[in-house]
Image (tube, rainbow, N blue to C red; front, side, top):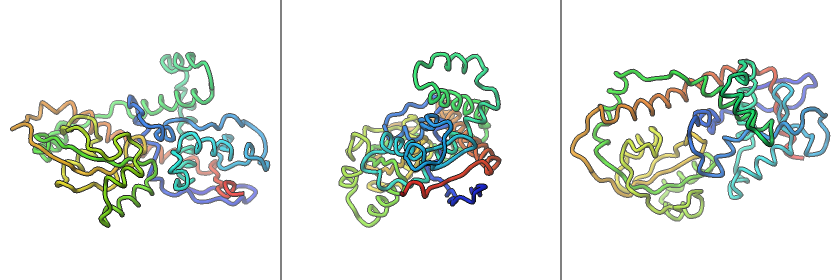
Length: 316
């Protein structure tokens, strides 16, 4: 994505972002359990500067724009300080943060264009806001758009049965795993390479993971528990003892690597009707992510002329 400004400002092409915000979009009802997740969920602190010029101070130096909305250097630094774990701050790609902010701004604007703030449920939520009005207003309207964009998405019975038949055997088992959770996909890739080279999983978990288990094994997790995403279940239940997955991405943008500690069979058979509702929810959610990704990409393409990135202003 590129936009040439009228003054021929130096801009940088936005890379494909592995840590897309769209899965936070699907957050529709998800619970955030790690502080790092807030980088994806929280709207940016851009409304503190509505006007102004591109001065030399951190409070006015512009890192990115979407139309009249600005992400200042100070805003960017605040996001990094508050929402990126200290151990990851030197490894986070600035474009990941900037890209998240740009996508949030674009979706927020679309929600306003659609008049979602006039809906009774949305208006009631807005009326309850008692502080940081603009910040919370963006979050409420963004969630309203996400709900609108993903509503009425279902998966046919044929596809549900096809998935069930392909994975039926796995529903007879439960697994115990160790995990490494990091906020940066680059760090996850580096850890994965170390594991492939023979590094100790537990030691790497103790050094890097954000979860409190610090590499200690989980309790047994049955297939279909809902504790893992469908993609995670597919990967974990295909592992052999002692094997580990490639980095997997959570709906909130975290990267996770799982190691299989134990797998045990807990039932003799299972019928489709026992997991039909679960599969409908999980596969519909997966489909909703794809639909929202397409819609966000379309909105970004339409807004290209209004998007400007000045990443050089991060370094002065």
